[in-house]
Length: 318
Image (cartoon, rainbow, N blue to C red; front, side, top):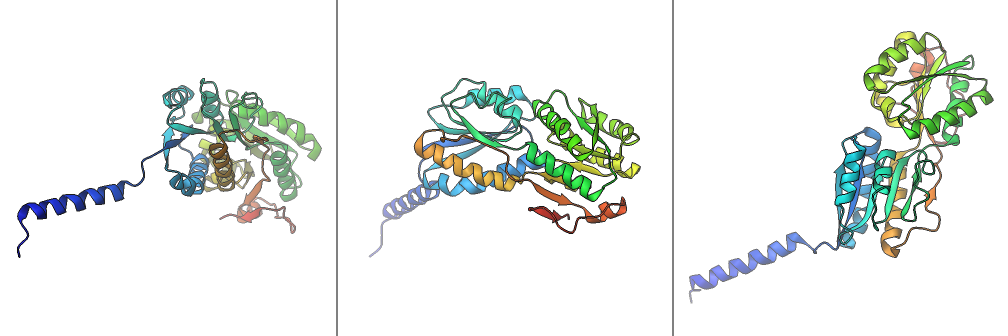
């Protein structure tokens, strides 16, 4: 017995509809929105780690993860935050100080989780009842960096530092560097820059006056790490930086937080916030134990040596 053409068409339509429903999956019950201040290796790593760690939870709870980029503009970050609908967005995740401040300054009932923020208190984040996050700078990072610098290059006394005075995170870290340096017999010579184009000339001038350069938690310096590295290498001076991922641009060593670990920890916090609808009892977590990445060949070529006993979380790069 032959099946009539209309029955065949109906069966095809039913199969197509079933396949569409299967592919579409469950309807979304809300969004997790990640607002990244700019495209940068460290922020990219933090974003990727957070996303990978929260993906299973999001899928199981029919939540979609949106990724928004402020393109290095605080105003853009504010506009993105304003566009987030409280009825749809369950959590805003802000990466880097300018993005976190912009989102926090935008009136909204949506909880805010921040990462890669040096000074949450100074940035006004700790006074908000809707924010939580993890700090990425502190005296533990700076002291570890200065200790490692003196251990590898014991004769270093004058250390140059470059920072952008327009970055609150940089001012916060510069204060710590100024307080910590005398404890290790180090005198700090600081120079200010406001554009990446100024870094090479500033670093060259500074190298003529110091034994080494140490820069920490400055977004502008991180973006132009290659220029500072080039100046340091030309002058045969060690260059230590506070951003692990910047090692690819040539610094002698880097001492800072691991953003893969931070992303994983932020995902745990995000799950708790979404599950309970509340900010955790201890919302503002201090800076994690820093990691040390070092180029042993570069250290030896500059007359230094790697200590036989290294601090925890140390590794040779590459």
